[in-house]
Amino acid sequence: DSSGVLTANDVKGAYEFTTVERDTVQKTKVIAANYQQVKSENLSFGTNGGRLAGVYVELGDEVKKGDLLAELYCEEEKLYFTELEYNMKTQKMQIEHLKAQRNLKLTQLVREKDKYSADEYQSKMTELQDEYRTQIEDLEDKIYIENMEYVQLKQLLEAYRIVAGMDGTITYVGNTGSDFRSWAGNKMFTISDGEELAFLCNEPEYIPYFTLGETYVFAT
Image (cartoon, rainbow, N blue to C red; front, side, top):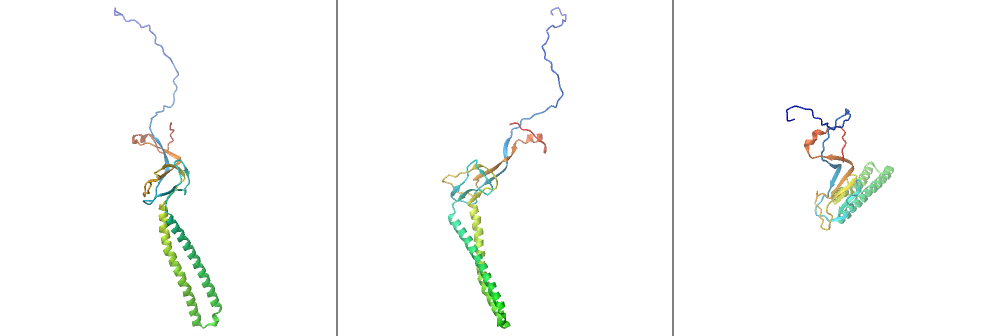
């Protein structure tokens, strides 16, 4: 007071009391992260300048590995590819037929061996084998040449088609308008597997907060 005498303050404070319990203290940190599919693939045509013949999927469609997603016009190539397949199949059948004929005639010649002298028999045997060898080799040469064309054409046709390489969902579809022209390597589709996702954080200073093998709970 003004007299300089120290007196007690009678004003009492209002307090609430609670029991303190010991527990684990948790330290939290807010880190921004995005979901990202662990498995995905980008697909494109393998040739330039092609026009779209068909697009068979839309954004959000579920696809299976091996499904045809899109293709370019290549009717002439398809027809020639089918022709080569038919020719080679036919020529292989002709070779088998010639071999059967040759073996039958050789069997007959062996049975009639006693009719000929040793020199005559050997001469007829050689003549018969040479006759069929020439026909078979001609057909084998044709098959060899056509097979080289077949392999090259097959690779070309594969470049004209886009096929799913995995099971998943179509999460991206590129330009499919009337002005479309293919460009090798230009992304046309993305397939993603939504069953397995990962958190993606682009801020490296947060890396020390995580330890390999530990389990974390993320709030969404």
